[in-house]
Length: 158
Image 1: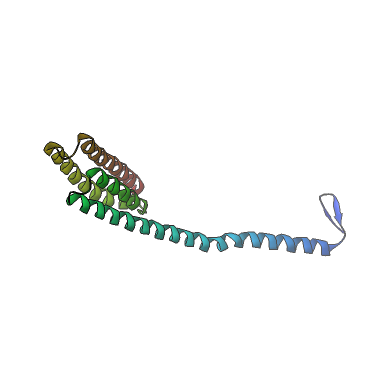
Image 2: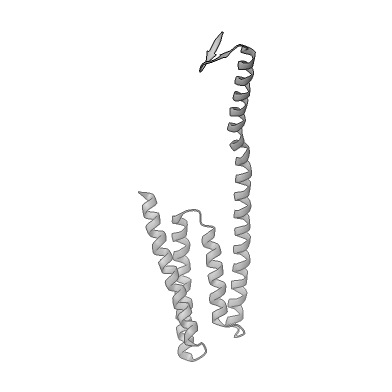
């Protein structure tokens, strides 16, 4: 007769059933994550696709608002708001810090151009000082993000 922790096991069949149940439970637990992985990958693809769609829409809005501004119909504040929304969407799509650095460098050049345009229009009297300050704040925000991305990129390369 087998004994286990002071309790005699009279029926080896009971031990076999218990072992089989334990093994099937362990195998079942091990297979659950692999079944969940395709759903997670699919979810990530869906999120990425939605982010890309959002970026496309916001870039189109930015183009429309910029064109209206060039024609004298829209104002520079609208252009800044549209560019900021598109910037955030584009940065959401970046998978690595190196990608963020590249995107931020390009966006910073655009922001400098918008800031110069705002300063010129402020001097001409067509734009108020608040709008020029918003353009400067946007440029500074991008410079800060760029420096943070560069620092993170250099840390991850070590």
